[in-house]
Image (cartoon, rainbow, N blue to C red; front, side, top):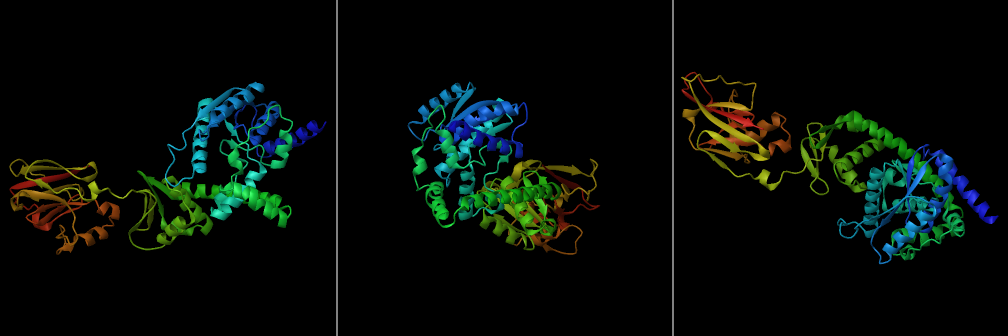
Length: 464
């Protein structure tokens, strides 16, 4: 009778969690992630009883991390457990050490590899849900870990009962309840010896910090679980508002994400911070507290500037906009070689662009200059000193913009046109005898313009 009581108590509370958070819908295929440990075996047994009531079907997935010699035997053990319940089974071997990114702990790398395997299984099987064996204790431990290391609202929400396709049916069940239930399972759970290694942060929280807190603050685990649930609800609200703000105020331009500074700073501070965090994630970086603080302080400044992020990502501030994700120009683009232009032909420019040059004469019907097309310039060929030189801009460059009263610094000219900094780094000039004849794609020099007396013109066109 004791078995019936233990089983009934846990199964009823799992059913309550499943229905409260709408984890399953009739007709769903659900993948149960089973490692062979006590939590996952209890999950499997409970789901075997719950699935018929909820009208769902099950299959079992085991992820073999290959970190211990006995891992292949564990996969066979879980296969036998799946056979006992008459369920389809699949084992996936992942390589953790070989693909581990720099700075990622083995535990974090294993988790990432495991979730990649989960995503592949969901896609391959067509399952709508994947259930993991996270318990109430896991949620409390995660809350403390993230509080100690600093994680913001998203991290303090802990392990939610449902996120995307992932569900945690044991989210209201405590570990001691799981262990009592496990004594009556048809199969003895496997034990991972690393679960006792207090050198690992989670194990220190589990075996040292939480027992200490329980001794001095009885019932603290239940209080922390309530806090995790409350923070989870706050996070869900904030995430939804941030998603709406992103849809309304963020524009994607090529590989970059743009938001106006006025829009960003009109948002309440928590929403502003979360929107920036979302843009950083979409740009391929992980937003920690210090990174977000740096970006927000940087965003308050004026003028144009850039702030390098993790890897080769960058946030750029220019003319009332913030631009996320633009990589700094590579060396080959910042320092493209100078090119001689001896006459007609096409010549290379950074970013795959080209300059086409051709001679036209008055007798052949010289086209009139088109001031509305800055990609085309007509220069008086007889005033030019060949070979011309195609080069990038230099500090101190000056020229006489067509139609202007005198010479100007090229830098000031481009700033007045509100040319973004990242575009200014790509600007090229066509030089004749040491003088700028054309700021390519922007403005010819007054001294080389075509006049009614021009007999031959050089037609220059920027090709993207």
